[in-house]
Image (cartoon, rainbow, N blue to C red):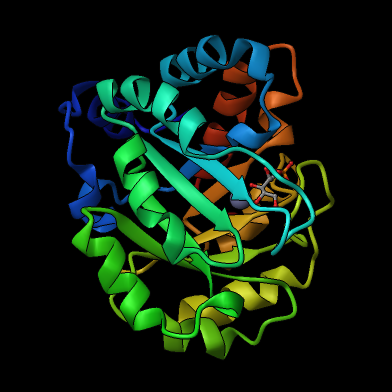
Amino acid sequence: MRSPQATAAGATRKLSTSLGRMSWAEWADAIEIEPSIYASDFSRLGKQLEGLHSAGAKVFHFDVGDGHFIPEITIGPIVAASIAPLTRGWGARLDCHLMVSEPEKHFEAIAKAGGDSVTFHVEVCAEPARAVAHAHSLGLGVGVALNPETPIEDAVAAAGGADLVLCMSIHPGYSGQAFMPEALDRIARLREALPAGVRLQVDGGINAETARAARDAGADLLVAGSAIFWNDDPGTAYSKLADLVTEPARA
Ligand code: DX5
Ligand code: ZN
């Protein structure tokens, strides 16, 4: 079961229209499962999000892909704008993962659409410090993502001032891929190298078999797409995963 404190905190969290400037650490210091909207049934998106909110979800992961940095074109600000009133109304976060080749070009549109944070890939950002400052100037939280082959040192060097680092545990592109086991060592090394206030997110292949290992390695924001949405009842799937990662680690 999730801790009573975590449940009470979720129920009493205040509505806010400016979560972006609040650091992730200030906003919530618990382990979070982030449903990845990319894997949802878009014909029933609002209903599925409501079910997940009722089940306790507080962060929704929103994958923007441009057909360049990854082959797929995914979803963008128009979809974000239609769901942000829901997530904002719940005091939840819309956490936007920009799998695009020119991430900064999209920050303003994401902010206007109601996104709460943007995560850009270090592989396509020549001036990460400028990108971090740019996102913050728009009232957005900001993260730095790295692909499975990218040296962790690149992300650590880019993460100054960022709220989170996103360690990919699949090759970015689509939901439903298997977790790459080598990500566990990378998560552990990143946790070691990053300041305590920087959250560590993992994205790709998180499910009942992999979530606790990712948490035990040091991740505290666990993105899950297919493990949640590719079920008859995403809310129940979310709750099971959330319970799993709020149980204490095995001795
Ligand atoms: C894909 C996206 C992921 C994706 C995860 O590159 O970044 O967020 O939706 O899906 P699962 O959890 O199924 O691997
Ligand atoms: Zn993602």
